[in-house]
Length: 359
Image (cartoon, rainbow, N blue to C red):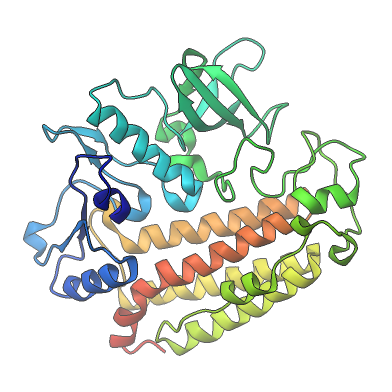
């Protein structure tokens, strides 16, 4: 957002508002400004419960976009934690239309949709790119799962939030936003008979249901198969959240993730799932005990958005276990997810829980 505000592409105002609703919002607002380097957009806070908005959601659930008359164009764009870079492309597609006085696209990058054309009717996926009247569509089910095809916009219907079964992106866990180019889910396995080495290399071997076994990371010579040591160390460098039990559990999760990166076995992934599940449960118990993130408006609840992210990460691991493979691409995504979760989500409760005496 700060980059958009600093650039000359969009004649818009960009606002970042902390909605804790009391004076503690000032500290979180300053911390957000420092961490995100908000030097060009407007950064503010709501300090009184009586001034709290009755509409909206936390920024982790997407941007609210208004036009120049302050009419709502989008109540919430797709969340970054679900579709990565596509979330920003969604916002840009809306801003391009608003600033150029052109129609809003019927579906934007990062939004879930389904095909309504012949043969593939009902197949679901995510919009990757919109160019003129064409939509690049990444399949998440059906015979072309994990692949991308281009369709006329009239053949792609955007799904509502209810049809998606949740927030934007439908909980698809699309890795690093490369859905539709053969890496959706970072571990999509396909055609039977695909070699172990090929699965190691790109984490995606087509559209069937193969489950290669015995994949030894050390035997794969392709760079894509390996996990860079510096990347691993940076991902597992977890800042303190000022609560001793949480810091200790973060260290245990990091230890399990390190073993996963080294072995890439189903057993090590099972260990990660258990470690994360136990940690997330304890964290949520602390939220209940000390009243973190509670809000009458669920969309403004830090507790709700935090626990939703827990569910997304656990669902991502469970789906990968069901596939029976542990490719390098999936492990890299999981490492990045864990680091971002601890640094973006967990740091939000650090001062609050510490001030309440949580240990």
